[in-house]
Length: 138
Length: 171
Image 1 (cartoon, helix red, strand yellow):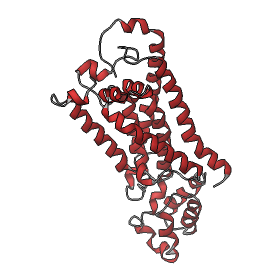
Image 2: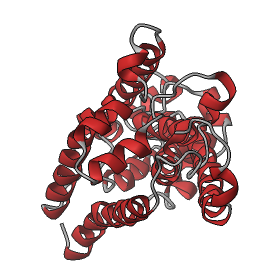
Image 3: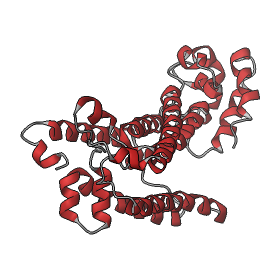
Image 4: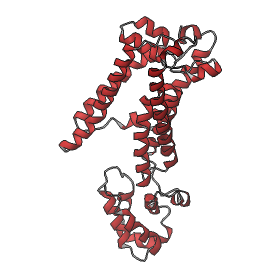
């Protein structure tokens, strides 16, 4: 792999990290626990249901402030996913540094559909009456 | 990229239909320089002598699939066998990311949806995927998601005081 090609590969994880870093700084400066500070979830406003990402901003804010229990109360799926996402980012950076892209299995159609299935399952579970006390923001 | 040269050579394959067997070999040879083409070049490079005889029945071999180098939809429906699906995952990912952008991830998946969707469209134009529509949908959802996300961020900065007075839940 040429030097320019490797630099092009490295641009992906580095630009991603830059955007996420800026977003985290902005999020830390503006508390999402204040109702409406980032708008409202359209699904919850219209239907009263919790979408899979409800509590994501508050959970991220809690994680940024070291409050793991608070983050878990907001969106446990996001708390579980965060270390996976961080690990995937490091893998992406590592592979790009060696001039390679991520393994094909992680980019397959099956991986995409698996992610969708997990999100749908989590959405159903956190809207069940006897589970929403644990899985919905509280 | 090497796919622009496909445009002049591949119309000949369909138009001559066996009249000029050299051209079909020229096209896979040109494609062979593209790394992600696992299926088509080996098939047609290995039995060079028999290919001319098979040209009328070339559908099982799938070579007319080279024609999906065109952006148009007609070759896709005329010859579904010929188009490879090795890069169809790009279209699926683009659509998933585009929908997630609307589910609340906003620009965090909208921007990837546009990038992946454009890659998927490119793959479809090269005959490596047959789901150009999914990629296109991902790109459109991504762009709309970016616009909505940017507008939402702007609104969140401009009108914080008004929204604080309303008591409701949010994402």
